Length: 326
Image (cartoon, rainbow, N blue to C red; front, side, top):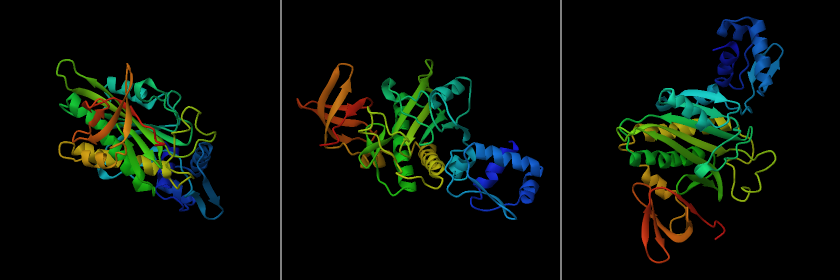
């Protein structure tokens, strides 16, 4: 870890507290000149570092920049072993982490980006990932002897964790549109994409990359026309450490469910947050859209639907549409 990274750790753990250059140099065992260079380097990255003569330097409490140091200070023991990599930009955090997984990266590897140039959603869609207003993360999981059915639960587990994270750092209530979209105030604020690789020999999961994108703040130029009617944000205005707190809250919540996945009840919280039960939905398939009514979500988070002809079906995966105006 270089001087700049050590200085950021000190600042993030002591936001709003001033340290003299002499104090910092002593704590980090570096020269005053190295401190000055590190401060300027952090400022160039967008950090608001205040400096007052005879008082020293401090990181502004209004700072809200994603960083490994900023996230780590909010992580609970259950998440302390995660291996965080925070990037200013990535083509796609899922694509990047899948490449690492193939090369043997360990479970708990986590890539977080401030923006994506080619963010991906479900069924080949793009995921709008502008600079500075969102969180885009991917987490590598390698559960032992995990069947395809059990692996499907990772997405629904993450959906519950995302709702809990949003609610813990805001005054909002988060809802789930089956199977993996998170809504706040009637607008989609987060999507989850899990990509997995299975062993042909054993049939068990080799690894899964759990991806999540979160619209934290309104984009500077607004959302693109094709999604502005459904896309929303968690916060309308900047928050003190909003992105780091939200990232850590999601990881903490998910890891609790994941660590006790054999016993954890995430189906109950998932069902209680579903807002499509009892509503008319369109079941999307390769042949088109078929109208149905969402009857319930079962203990495995499968959607139970009833078609207009009276036929019922239990959907383990797929996609449904919903007219939110009705």
